[in-house]
Amino acid sequence: MEKILEIKNLNLFFGELQALYDVNLTLEKGEMYALVGESGCGKTMTAMSVMRLLPKLAEIRSGEIIFNGNNLLKLSEKQMRNLRGNKIALIPQDPMTSLNPLYTVGNQLIESIREHTHVTSKQAMRKSREVMDLVRIPDSASKLNYYPHEFSGGMKQRIIIAMALATNAELFIADEPTTALDVTIQKQIMDLLSDIKKEFNSTILLISHDLALVSNYAEKISVMYSGHIVEQASAGEFFRNPIHPYSIALLNSLPTINPGLKLKTIEGAPPSIQEQISGCKFHPRCDFCRKEICTTESPVLTERRTNHLSACLVK
Image 1 (cartoon, rainbow, N blue to C red):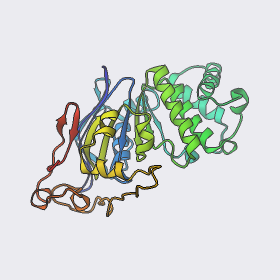
Image 2 (image 1 turned 30 degrees about the vertical axis):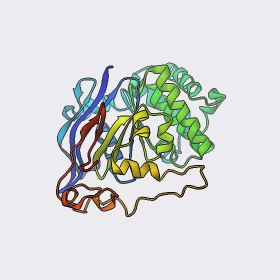
Image 3 (image 1 turned 135 degrees about the horizontal axis):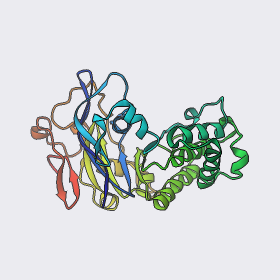
């Protein structure tokens, strides 16, 4: 299949503190790829590195981010502005704060379309109605005159997705797109993203901590812990045969409908960026830890089964 995004050996620092360690991801055209892990593990920093929208103190010291054959880290800011929203679209996790409360949804859609596609106001208005229909907002013509506060959280998220669709983006980065939405609306939003992927052959990088949600939609999965990718596999293989102790612990912590099974929690908490942990970053919380090697050696992501990679010294 055609590769659309390749992240190669990405290392990100905040001053002398390292946040991402040799991150490698490859997304192929038309797939939904999930990057999962607990809060603070580096998922959003990875996504923001692709968008080149990092905080001022953040610095990418090595690595490449290849989008359609071009290294994004070597593009000028003007070139990146042309890509953002046009070829690469961000669907943020908080639709409540992503829309300007002072302007109608129609005004914001039209402005976004004209910024990235250079069409007339009339053409932008027509396109706005089309994308509102695509994201299944009823009575789109009148809804364009509504202000953001007149929509529910789920409808706001649909409008954000409509903005991404309006510019014919090839890559969508969905950063926790169902945060703060109830379960029914979560499914509607994920079904919508899945339908868009199929209809337009779009590629979606889905950032999430919700393995149950991811299992129903993603084709491939990378698990991140403390800035490291610790496991990569197809979704089916990952959920059938997880290898890394962290992945196993995450799956064991998922609720089940079996009343006889107790929820297993992962003891402790993920390390902060300031904590210096020698060896494997997961060893203080790992049920399989062998101190003689896990506390001294750093594991490398290695193929353990066909197209199934894990970074563990003992499994």
